Image 1 (cartoon, helix red, strand yellow):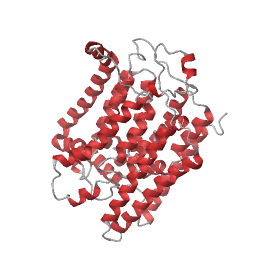
Image 2 (cartoon, rainbow, N blue to C red; image 1 turned 135 degrees about the horizontal axis):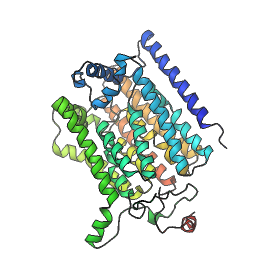
Image 3 (cartoon, rainbow, N blue to C red; image 1 turned 60 degrees about the vertical axis):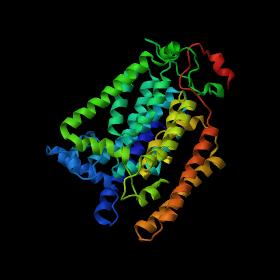
Image 4 (cartoon, one colour; image 1 turned 90 degrees about the horizontal axis):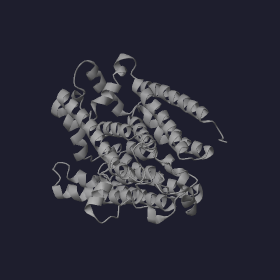
Length: 434
């Protein structure tokens, strides 16, 4: 029996977030340092422009889908804190979806509640929504896609996936593992896929790879181009292209450049944890060479392929390690990116054999310590005006090392557990690997 009911946890979380939003209003009014995220002001201005019939991209630095501005139009019609309540409600929805996924996978109540607590009462997550950042909306949609896939609702998963990639481009990294998990040995027409229970933990390393080993090209093509994969690709691609074409029709090149292309070529010489930031700073007045762009992208691409080929069948874990690696090796890293993998962390904790004392504690100390070390040098640069670019770059290297250390430990202590039981696998087969 759980130490606290899930409904009580949600109510306490909701009250806590309302208090933080109200406190933020007070701090914004009475203190020099604002509680509200500067991005929220950008969202609000863009929403106000849209409400008056203008393009949201008339607001400089608005580089998001017009859907976000549409969602925040009540900021100018009802109250300027509408968006904060919307994002905080998405926070709570993420907690509900985490609970749903863990219940579907048969995780005991105590363990699932503790996992949900790791999201709802994580300082990184409850401040993001209450300060007015939109990432909780993205997190909720990604978890909903996982739920749809687990329930065999491929078309619904495809629709939401196409929409979220339009809304925020980074979930494109999840396309390949989703396609790979739509295995013909799992998904059959008219049949609900069988979920593997938490109690049947898979430890057979030979089943980790999802790469198909078939020789004949025709058999390979039939195995890869299944009905579910084709439908997922067509539906998600159509939704993405429709949204893109629709908003291009409304707002033209401004939309295409600011909402999509900018994020593919973005460089940021400040507020950037990435190891590439120093090179970007030195070359900021010059266009980066094609070779430089390829070299910076290559490590990220290789790591993604290795992780996908190893863990695709364990979909939530694959998403988690992909996201940690994607953020760690990205050319631009800001604090809000950490929420991308924090929403997935509770989905993998029940399958970790790592104990909080000492290994788990060492992970927290190393990761937080490396970040605080970077922030110290960032403070000297931004607020004291000191020339500490080299020290800040060294701190970025240390932060990459901390993320790599964390990733290796998490993978080492993870008990591999495919989401689905393949056809022909019996309960006795699953028990043999325990």
